[in-house]
Length: 427
Image (cartoon, rainbow, N blue to C red; front, side, top):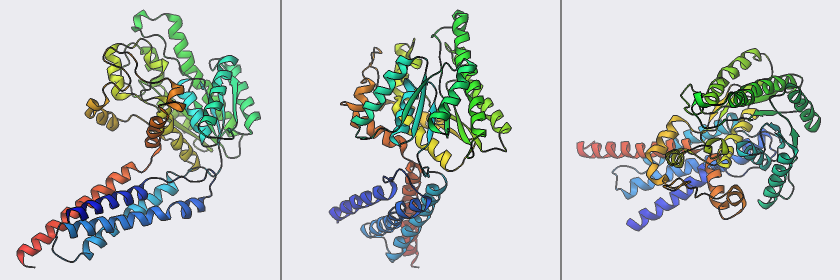
């Protein structure tokens, strides 16, 4: 009986995995193909898994009463979650019907580069900006060779435009050039940012404070303005995504006071733009990448800071894998006002509770880095580990999977108690 129970559990786990994990789907889909081709096996799997696991568990446990009751209960639970999964696939997780045209400012390194790479893997057309031709050429060559190394025979369209987002005329020219290159801009991500030096605010040079404010706040204002003007002239409108950062929630950012002050303005800016554009087809959203191992974060960081980074940080490519599918879904579903957070309070608490298993992930006890450079993480020895992290970040069904499993467990407990109570009372 023990071997049978173990075998039943293994088969159930395989069936649950097939039911809950998203399967690869074509890049260009119609709503009907998403509705009928992708979902059927998942929904059927959820129903069958629920029926199988409760029926088998009750039989192995020797529960009194007819076995059809827990079997039907499991099937009913599976049906409920199949309906929830179907609704989310159609209304929340739906990918666009065709590739998108994307513009990412500050796209030559860090998160901007990772976002461009992730959009390109979805076959979207991407324009990135940088302050120099040399930086753009280097980044574009790295992205193109990287995609070919990942198995993409035909690299999607990637272009670069030199632009200093603090200069109004350059931002105006950026919008016009992007329109000429791609025909339209579906998504404009205001990502360009500057943290300044890691110092007490009273010790910061005035020139550094000015550069932080101009790049982050003025640059985002100018880009949002030109993006909105461009998209108002497009038949289908478009979507503006503003990238927040530390301090966006009003919390203190010691050593980065100017940076935090600029980021604190972004939710308010997004709300104001949304109100002004409420009657149009232009959506305004905010993205929150959390803590990433980038030059912005590591500048001036101490050994103690780096131990915290082991717990709370991720590489830019992992964060991009989380953000990009949600950006694409927001566009596909015509949403407005989304605030997509990678590091939520709940996930931060979970990371703190599991901190013993995160010690030494990126830095050793002395603060020396132990992680591989970007090229190795994407194409070298660390590629498989990176791919696993990205797959987890892209997944949408984790919360449904947890709720589904807990529902089955609770139902088993309730049925077991009820059966034993009925047997005890003789009813």
